[in-house]
Amino acid sequence: MPLPADIQMDLHPKVTPFFDAQSNTIAYVVQEPGGPACVAIDAVMNFDAAAGRLTSESADAMIAHIEAADLQLEWIIETHVHADHLSGAPYLQERLGGKIGIGAQITTVQETFGKVFNEGTAFQRDGSQFDALFTDGDTYHVGAMPCTALHTPGHTPACMVHIMGDAVFAGDTLFMPDGGSARADFPGGDAVQLYDSIQRVLALPDEMRLFVCHDYGPGGRAIAWETTIAEQRAANIHVGDGASREAFVAMREARDAQLAMPKLILPALQVNMRAGDVPEDDAGNMVLKIPVNRI
Image (cartoon, rainbow, N blue to C red; front, side, top):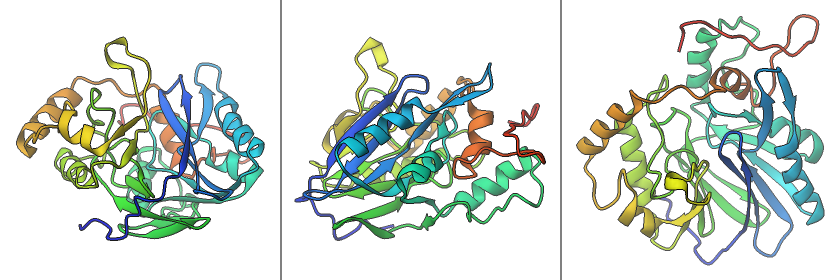
């Protein structure tokens, strides 16, 4: 899988982060250089599982920023099907427009979790809930700014990294250098694939800005979200300084075996595989399933 040949390091989009403390997610609004077009990446809806209450504070903050800056939302990107928060994509789209895009391997995720949640035939497993399905190397535009999607499986089959000028949005493929990398033990995950995907990202230009989807403040440091390819290659605790595939896979598999499931994995997966729409019963009420002993 070659790297795109048309990376434009002279384009410096404005990146505004939005940190959601409940899920330790960083969502982004990315504005084209010199223009009003923007893209929202990994928008979050707030969900109180104990109360069964869905609210929109995190997504509303992104909307307020876009409206205050008089921006035009053209794309709403999901880097993958998140397991730790519910997507705010349809909420943003309803209020501001834009197309929702995700990796084409969403169909694999839908097929896998369609079985876990015992979804009937009404649940389409063809990715049709999304406006665009990206394959490796696909390009699209935010205003005049060209963007490229790279397929980076390993954490999930549908993970994509998005390149926008001198910025790359890594989703869960990489964390900050002192955070390492994402787990690879969800259904469809694969530590070998994750290592190879990370190596592909690390082959990007040294000075490229890299933005992560999650940060947990290791060691009590302040939450952070921006690093560089050079910093990742030199200092990432899981893959930096030339770590081998064999060492990474052994570390990742041992570490993953000790991790608890994300608190919101069951509501998040069944919502996010639907592009953020909450399933409904026959009366039109939003409902969620809790399958037992399936994950």
